[in-house]
Image (cartoon, helix red, strand yellow):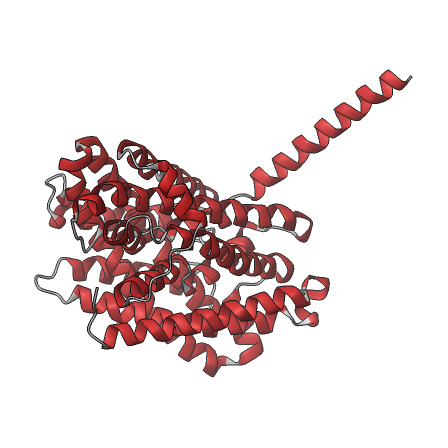
Length: 425
């Protein structure tokens, strides 16, 4: 009898594990997609500069950034699961239309600047292979528009999850670059803080490029549209954690690849395109090609998500119908806004001598100013018993979250100072 009971226990445990795994696979998507898309053209450029200019010295920041990312994303997912509403909806309902309008006016400007940067990334990545931006950008814009407008939520999500897989190109690039793994791993756990303007500016950039306002709106809207229930919350939380870990692994390998090649030879870069071109004579054509392909994948991925996130946020905030599962006639404002953002974002990249760098810098400044306010709104909402019931933050969680808000506010203030003052170092 004892043997039979042991066999039964084994099969019950196995069945429970399989059921849990199937539930996770059904829920997986919003967390992994949201985190990975933040490794966009701007993010890859920032990680590349961190490695090329400072070697392994900034790798220690990956762990605290990972913790901050998990905490913020988990709150977004939890609010979506429990309330069944997007963050924009909740802000409008609890803080009024006027606050919502000014908030989303700022969000629109910063996201538009970021969308321009993504199409600039598409152009830069394919120029490495000799393809003109006048060919690559229009084709890329048509592709991302067609994907969302003609697809449904399941189809779009599968394509986005597929795009996440291609970030492995950066991991392969990291290995091809033959880094000093011992020094890299030591730098990961041993902080090497420097009070230099250049170093601090890149550190602020690493935080800012990994945690952006649009992420909270997109993640929560995706959780709601996917229809994740409270009973599936723990699996949704795991989705967020897995996505956050994966994005940091990719960032680690980008920094390592550039640190072990460009930093070693003293090569300075300004973008991911510069990094890919500089890697060719140092780490070989395959490493450079993989780096460039990763930039293309990331840019197209983000060029799909950022307009989508903006359309979700603004339409939810203004009470219009939104969602990829709806047809154009059911959500005209949603699809019209999505289309307009793609047309403008791609169009300006094709204008000769357009001040794209200025637009990108301004959008990043607004991004930085906006983020603490978004987090304050989130903390106010997630601690309301009438909204969250038993799923409000614990006291310890709130303390950590408020420390994050304060730290991010200080870092963003520093970012503004570094943009005003001449950079040194």
